[in-house]
Image 1 (spheres, helix red, strand yellow):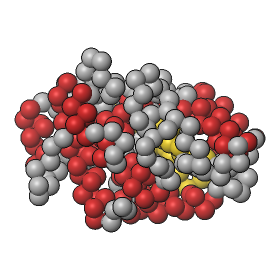
Image 2 (image 1 turned 90 degrees about the vertical axis):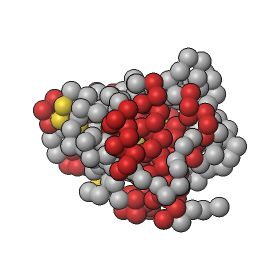
Image 3 (image 1 turned 45 degrees about the horizontal axis):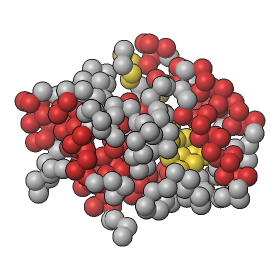
Image 4 (image 1 turned 135 degrees about the vertical axis):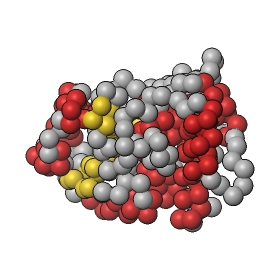
Length: 283
């Protein structure tokens, strides 16, 4: 059953609590980008993307999603669990030995929802373009979605893929850039500036959409739905989604420091008080 906007907003809070609980339990993981992308994942799986359960690797006549910046696996795993791809209780195994929920998504254990191993940055778009072209060859009109970090765009392979997509008119793909302006070593402008990213992507032949309120669920749903109307017109589509790393937890916002650091017991309790739910939120 489709969830209402209010139910989805509540779910974003639950997913944020899941993220923090998972990384805290093993003192390892990447909460910052995960918290910032929660609205994107909730919108994609809750309103925008066409998919069926139980999950199949082929996913014929279904939309596909490929996470390129695989280090934000906590938000990915929580979203998949909360949308019934696998039991929520399995989130307890995050980053533990023999778990299907490794720090970066893998495929060898067959975790439902995961179609590629990712985390070696720069590779996701290349894979997704192959899938998108395969769908066209099969007469499958579904859409392929991807997500990338803005720091990830410092990888040259991404730009090769941008160039290829436009040259080959791969117009059944919607790529989103998590445009939070931060990466593991600092602000992207300080590490290696992306310059005018909107103009660069347009120059590479993409239809470029931009949303300044990437942590507003309704705005994210709207820009994704608008992107769908731009597919099938001979050009690939990209969304520049401005988010805040660590969104929802005040001491994590405004800095790159929480890119890959877990909260301690006291910090977790503080975050949970900020991410309050009326009912106790657990796995």
